[in-house]
Length: 123
Image 1 (cartoon, rainbow, N blue to C red):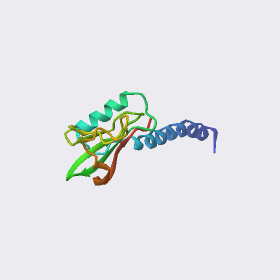
Image 2 (image 1 turned 180 degrees about the horizontal axis):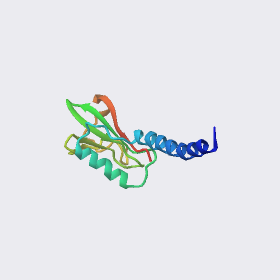
Image 3 (image 1 turned 90 degrees about the vertical axis):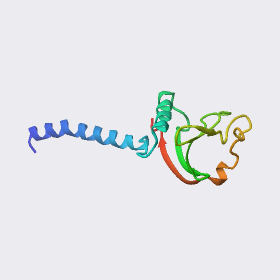
Image 4 (image 1 turned 90 degrees about the horizontal axis):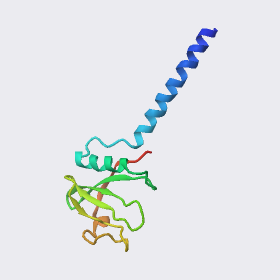
């Protein structure tokens, strides 16, 4: 290879590497296409906050014949949230001081079906 070809390769390689890194990083926190806009808004709210540990996530389930969205709690004594497809809060299935949620849907973990990860924070 001549010097000119080597210089071109050195200029192109970092660009290709950066595109590959950015593309791979986007997959983890990509929102599922069929997610309702109001759930996407909940995700945007989470993204504005500080990064959670463990990473924030949103899960879709079938529960009592309806599609629901579960957002796990992120800290001690915090409630998780269970929303319907219109972002109406159904209940807080777990979390709180006792860990048992608000008591409004104590059967959620037994009856939920068809788990699907909608989104996970990749930051």
